[in-house]
Structure formats: C-alpha cells, structure tokens
Image 1 (tube, rainbow, N blue to C red):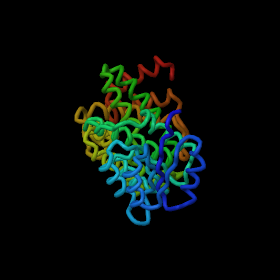
Image 2: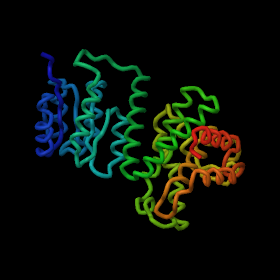
Image 3: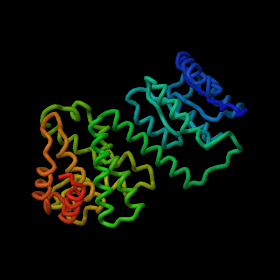
Image 4: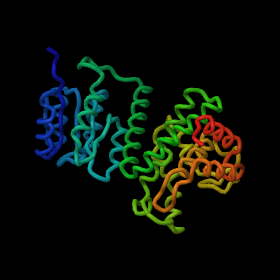
Length: 325
C-alpha cells in the first residue's frame, strides 16, 4: 500500500486546521501546528511532504518561518495562506521560494488542487539541492502565477483583456519570424502587461465615467509599477522593458519615457498594437466597443504616430487571414 503523504498545516485558528483535517483526511495524513516555532519543530522531526503556512502567526511571522523552512530543506513545498489585500506579502513569499499561495477566505477546492499540483513530483524520496537555474525558473513561474491571479481577482476585464492581447501579440511575433523562445517571452509578458494596475485604486480602475486628469495620471503609473513587480527577478529584463514601454508612442508622445520610433523595444511595439486593438473592440462602462473594422480603421489612422506602421500592416494581415474582420 502506498504511503500517505504528510501535510503540515500551520495556522493559529483551530477552525482552519480542523477544516484542513476534515477535507484532506481521506487522501493525506494531516499534521497541525499553531505557531511558527511548533511548525519548525515538526518540519525537523517529521519531515512532511508539504507545508501549508499562514503568514500571520502568534510568535514568528510566516515569512520568517518560510525562510527557516527553506534553510532546513530548500525543496520542501510550501503553500502560503494570506489575508485579503496582502498581495505584496504573497509576492514576497514566492520570491523566497514558496510554491504557491491561497487567500482567505479559503476555497478548499482550489487549495486541494494546489496541494495535488505541488506534490505531483512523486513519492517522498531523498532530496537533493536544486540547481540555481532550477530555483530561478521555479520562482519565475510561481511569480507569474501569483501576479496573474492577483490581477484577475481585482479586475476580471483586465484578466480577459490580457489573455486576448497575449494571443494577438504571439501571432504578430510568429509573423515577424521570432523564435519559439522569443514568442514565449512575448506571451508571458503580454499576459502581465497591465499587472501594475494592482497598485492603482479600484475606485479609479472601475470608474464608470471618463477619468479626470489627476486620475489619468495615476493610471499611467501602472507601467512603472508593473516593471517594479518584476525588477527583483533577474531573468525578466525583457519582460520588464515590455511592461514599462508598452504605452510609448511611435512619435515620441507616449509614456513613461517618451521613446520614439525604434528606440521603443520591438516587443513593446508589438504589444502596443495588440493591446490597443483588443481594448478598442471590448466594451467598457464609459464607452461602446468598436467593431473590428472600425478598430482597424483606427489602427491605420494612428499608424506612424501612435503605432509602428510595419507592425500595424502585419497585424491587419493577420486579422484578415483569421477573418476577424
């Protein structure tokens, strides 16, 4: 009979730990801890297969506990529980090696799926230290995951918008002959291009009428905020550049750096066209959606001023080929 995997749940609320035990008892052996010190003691003594860790504990904060767990066993999966509105804590935890996070109030179906995914590496076995490249990749993918989830939770429109923008941008990259690796960079950055909006007040993001100049100035900060989210992750220089510059204009009148023409990175020029088209054909509370033909007319009108004319021509060709217009 296959050994049941041990999961250590650390939370100072007995209702939470009891819920975990009830939900998971048919599949896993559930250990519980109610403080950071107790958690670390159990990790050392029992060597569980996975730890679920609340960031708010009565003695040691969860981020400190996470650091110590990773010193004990860097490959031990840790899922962090965060409170509402603590996305910065979740990002910090992922940078420190947490595998995933889930926000309170807990969705146990989602959590069960996250646990299964984190344990999918097979039965417990002697662990070896991962290479630095593996650690970077793991943290990179985890960060992409949490940023996307935060973005979608705050603004469902932006989540759908980013997915469609990503599809358009990859098609443009393919038509330009970019490599498979370059297309993947394009896809990932396009999914995250508006992530800086998590730092903008929801009252501004979801305002049903036109923004005033002060509000618009706040929204424009999202490119730099988004770049800042990715800045600590050294392998994401290209993605940072795309996120920062996707609202630059070909005529130099964009933001934040007023780059002009081919001073704007190619990836950002691609993203600008895909982003603008998808925004134009999507309805918003303060305006109706344009038809695909109307949006193409607008792309043509702004070709050479707002957009790279070569990329506009390629994108229109793609849309006609796909019969989107």
